[in-house]
Image (tube, rainbow, N blue to C red; front, side):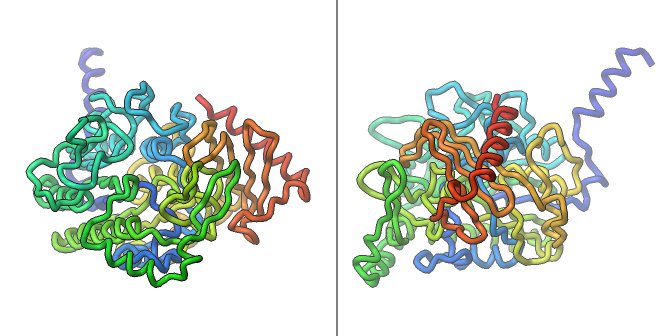
Length: 468
């Protein structure tokens, strides 16, 4: 064989995905990504105001992570970490992406979608993307065979049909959902399209489908049929409890209790739609052949830098979206695979970056260590053997920007029970023992100055080594 012919043959073997016997027993993957959903927004994690029976049941049917963190306090960087397995600063995304900006997920990154696509999976993506608004940056160009309702912004123009700003069209308009009725609601419509995708678009297994809801991001536009229910629940709260606020650094204000009827209605509607999707899997006989991952892109919007607080409360965790306190980065995350994964709690600290290698590992696909550089497969921990590989793991966050939540540039590190927050433009370092103080109320930096200095040095070294 001539050298040129041999090279072309080898390229074909590398480029085209394997089919046939290798894929027969591979599981499907359904990834449900929610926007701005906080750790405490769900009943299974402690909410007594929001009603989420279907998500609660999903969580209890699988592995529930108690200490799972978003890779960043705001959306685009976390979504970049999900798609690449790298901390956001490695790919140059350290803040949410503006619609008119030039920042996007770098073209050279092999996304999670591409990894499954190259392994022979059918891939689909529905909903919020927020990793670039050009055609070459769209999920259809980044490893997803079929896409739907991907807009060019970080939130929808409206949750009400036609999901657009009729007076001033723009990047927040949600495409591909024409033909609805005035009473239709975006979260319902996205779920309907996901179920239709399973029934009509997925023509063979295995598949990797990501449903990325716009909910529960602002605008707070609840479905009309649920609003009165939660207005009545608020009326049953003590007035001082319903209106409770907490002070946050730099003059910001946090909501002190879950008492926003519109937000609660959006959460319940989300819950109902998760149930609809799981019922769709069951109807198609796919439940035991499908890994279901449920996660969020950052903490709940609790704290704002103006005169009012956000629509949810993350208590006992401090602050919310936009902050490197626990309320801004600790998120609900569950992985269920009936008949294969034993239901239970997993207490190891983990992060969005871990989902890439974990899903490859669960599906029996080769790891890509040079791609998911900062992620670590959680499969051993989900089997109950956390071992030494997770014992002294260091997690870090880098947010060098101010945010409308009131946040000022900061970085944070968690190592074991210790959490360090370092504000980058002030002489301000905070140290917390999360084992004794998960609400980060007692700053121990003056009592443990050597430890604080050591952790700060480690944090700065990590930032220097990982910043693009």
